[in-house]
Length: 287
Image 1 (tube, rainbow, N blue to C red):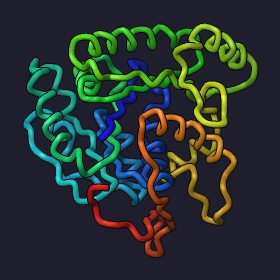
Image 2 (tube, one colour):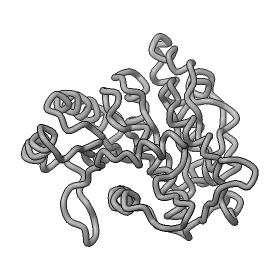
Image 3 (cartoon, rainbow, N blue to C red):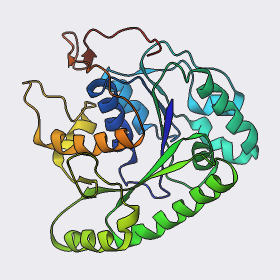
């Protein structure tokens, strides 16, 4: 199981959007079994995934697992370990080793049941971020195209480097991912400045598409999060332009994680509610 930590010390940089939409894409467009861990007590990622109708919550929460230990019942191929207020108490416990071991044990026990684990970290430089980096195989840093955002990125990179050198030698950096980019006015100038300053650190596109990855500021992305659905879902069956644009980013991340695509899974709107349902989903099992 590959484990991807999505981190940044600043809030509002698109972490929840990336965690939810990448998870949905990997599960339904690429057919992989996905587990999401929400380490943010605001649980935006948890709520969107659960309310979509496509992702099943575990019978316990991230905060309880990290505080008290315990295992996860991996009964479905797409699940989320929800965030909760217990996460706020972890820093005061002063037991980083014990908390890390609790989450490690829970994830290790289900590692054969999932291809990918996505950890959505809280927007703060506390023990949760350090634990996520300690347990992950890869990490990704989304950020806004603003000069002041670079300072936050530098701090996050420095913390990750310490973890990589002293705790988790196999941790790999996928890159910086520009988020909510507007190609007009001062934002366009900022974009060009960021490209110049951070070229070697930016997440690169793979395959026939060249250049750096970025997520543009699209109203469709906001709508998808608001209505708890994948960007790629369209009731009329016609692909959205924004979905194709975003797919290039997700496929690039997917390939750099070293994952293998499986059979695509169709989804449709439920006849009984506004939620979505998967069609012909197989029970969870090892590939």
